[in-house]
Length: 239
Image (tube, rainbow, N blue to C red):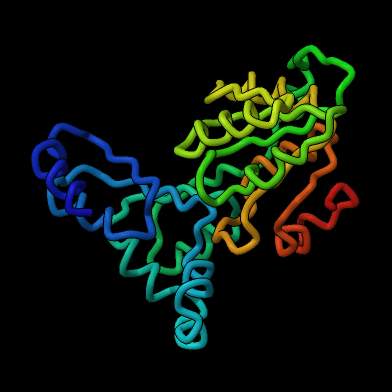
């Protein structure tokens, strides 16, 4: 926030409209200090109750509705973008303002038009995401069977470590780096199994890529049991 504050002090006056994708921080308030431009807050799926439940469980009973947090953090926003009507309605408890619903999900017609990547005879496992300390691919790679190959789509601080590990154990692993979304979907459509190889205790919710795995017809091998138990993941695809 200190770096953001310093940057905003020098640059905020250049903008006619400011889009804020980190609404549940002090960022909207900082922006409003340095600029009179309208602020659009993108709520995404980071609803305050989720944050409170994870980090401050004792406050859940006091602020179950999240309205106090919403009033304080989103007060500077001139408009709100949310992933569902429910989210938008909850945000609007802090005062009526223009709102837009942009749902999570998959454009199936666009997905159908994408051609899968070429295949070989090996069982193809795929991981999509940031390659950081919260993933556990380093536990999988040394034990990857000869009849399987692993495709890792994404970048991150642990990427070099995983490359070296795959080379050390002479495993069939391909690291694509960051890709455009359509290329990522092409790899997904060519795979046999999707991996949600995230540390079981990592504080990560259900991202949109899970919906993309299911849209591609992939079974999901998940290390997060709580993810497989959530309502919209009641699918035989989860293991």
